[in-house]
Image 1 (cartoon, rainbow, N blue to C red):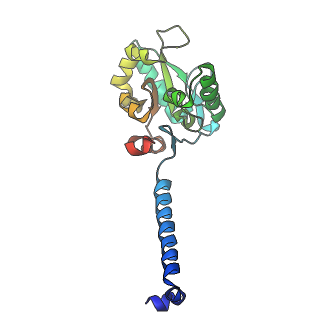
Image 2: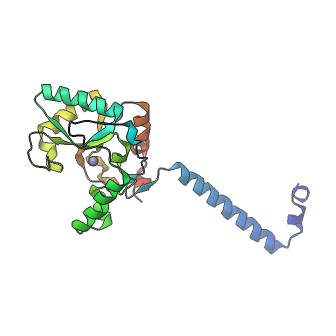
Image 3: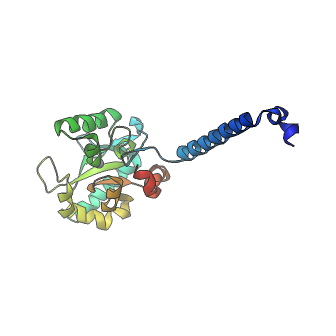
Length: 220
Ligand SMILES: [Zn+2]
């Protein structure tokens, strides 16, 4: 069989046969590893890569036209906000869609201002290209009872009426917390103020890897 298929191979000296066979095995191994890698989501320091939404698919969620989400997410957020208001809770949209440049500024300028290493910065802020905010499905929610600009965009948000209301009701509106406490093992800080819409097939698929990503991938 061997002599019919690869006659030249059988005529080679033993050393060269072994050498070529070795190269073939290494190349095959390399291809297998690359194929497996291509199936894995691309990530940096625990943050997955996300496509930026088409700006034409976005809609403002407040009157000042500062915070935008994709249309389906925007409509549902406004519906959720109205229901919360009826319950005496004001969900304040702080930040929605961000383009690559905005995330670049937040990540690199923020790190410089705060004298943070990139590793430390990535705990609280995704690198550009790797933020859920690019998708147009995620937003940061502040509590309207706060008057300061910060609006409790830190873990004190957990103590607010807005947070308690969201935990109880956000699921009814297809919103879920992106970075709950158990994601700390992925080197991403607990962000009780950051929620994402998963109420249609595209949004659900957008965040699918984030739900199933194995720990050994994210720990890199
Ligand atoms: Zn956020």
